Image (cartoon, rainbow, N blue to C red; front, top):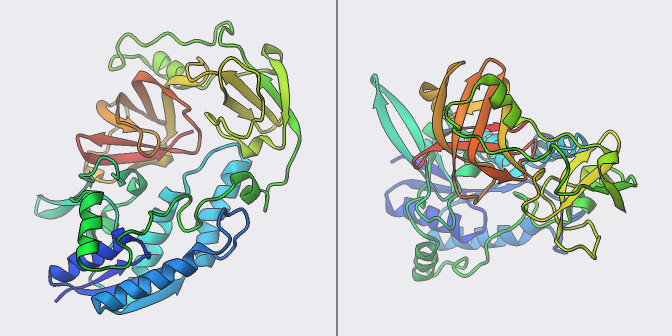
Length: 397
């Protein structure tokens, strides 16, 4: 009987994952991770893991499985939270959930699971895995979850073949309603528990307050840029699949803004607290349309804003990923320099997949979209799919 160590989080998804594996005949062991103790900036009055652990213990007792705990808070701080601070300080917007999965849930978690004699690990993610045999070797495909409202493959876009070889996704073929029903039928205490929100293991936070632990406030100007700014609007590409190098680079470059191109409309407490596309926190009223952050100049501590979702600076057709940031889940599908392919791409969780052309060049990958994308932000991950298979990902430059 193979032993599977399941990440029990105290939520309904991981609870049902453990139950399903138990019904499939595995020797199931639960492992609860404590990854964060500090409550600075959190919107709950207590550390969220305290309640989570109680629910995890009750689920383990109901299923008659052992539950172990491991405190990975020091490693989580170094690998995920410190990375967040560094990225925001540079004016970039990281995705801590992607990093958490790559660095913690599918790395340090596996190490601890091995100490418990694991053959495999399992999580409650809404995604699927498929095994192929290519040249006599097992190759693993990472597939989108069946439930379009909960599909979570994007968060796993940095996983590799070794990690996938050890991992099961027991609930990826189910819908959330199925999970709730199964939990209720088995009388699990998590059946009606609300899903966790916010940053992985930290919870819902007030981001400026959280970031001020290391990044102090610094007053600066807010400059509004008109929609009619000369030369900033980009004409749509005639055919995204047949562009030359000069066109590819032109569509991928962010618009450069300067203070004398706009009008000062307010003050802020630190450009590093804001991200492209952000609306909340500007505290400026009296405009015909909502203001959105168009860009941040960290060196000069300036925020550029503009009115409306359709502002030409806010919407771009392309992005660039440096060569050393391009990751392929299946190395056999890796693109070579000079190659181009059609893929479906998303640049944030739950964004509908977008038609795009990927151009691989010596310095990295260029992604050109059929339709302009709002709020392309340095530091975030772009993930590309072939049908429902997540093929690769990379950090936007």
